[in-house]
Image 1 (cartoon, rainbow, N blue to C red):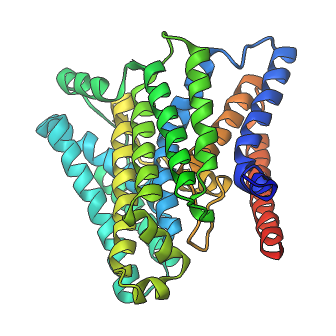
Image 2 (cartoon, rainbow, N blue to C red):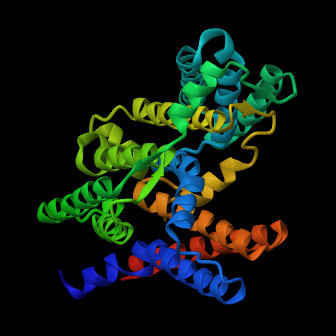
Length: 378
């Protein structure tokens, strides 16, 4: 690899989110150790950060796909809340799994509706999903009757706990996933896949980090089940985007939809599928969220769509389509929740949290924009 390649792959634009996460955690770890004596890097706290970031990370991965296609979806958090509300309202009468199936079907239906309005009527996705965000929030109020709902049936509660609760040992999984990421990056390099939208080196860095985490954590390292679901989902989407014809077409649709159409790609179908994927993922995240406590309230996940989008932006996903990495989006989600976790340990107020998190997102966008401009001039 040439010096230019090294600068490209390990520069701020390509690997900045990894550097930011490591630097942020190092600073928070030092500050918490000196001010309160708390061990920020304890296995319990680190796995707690993974758990807190899992649902946003999962939705962020799907958001990255839809952003790559050149569209936008502001309704993800509302869809997740609706899915959770439907689950809780029906689970007592139908049982957990039938209610979860109904919730997923409704979420997928919202994705179809968003995609159909955007693709068939030609209305801007931002406007469409802003409208569905508001409408679906109204549906949540209708389903919940503007009050909190909870599951009373012990059998249904037990099913929810079995689905969402509990912990799973992950050392072997970290080795496997990390090895696959590194092997995939090596294979992509071998085939000379140098497309900037599917750079393999970010995945290689993530793979090495996962292997290192597995070595440090030891055989007893375990995480909550939502973390496992998010990791598996991210791995599948990463593989599809980076190593299949479908993935190449997704990037082509977002990069230049007219050129993709002339090449024989069904642009409308791919953009529609991205909306369905995004809403379906949000529906699954809503089921996990509702299963966490066996309850839901009308304001659940309100504002979470902004955190999901922020994670994608921190990961370097372009808002104009054609570029993005689901692995870096996941790291972006971890960065946000590592920051929030540190604030909680340091007992900083919510006002300061919002100020600093917003500054971090703007700074990340500035770094990516400046880095992209320099690369184009080079």
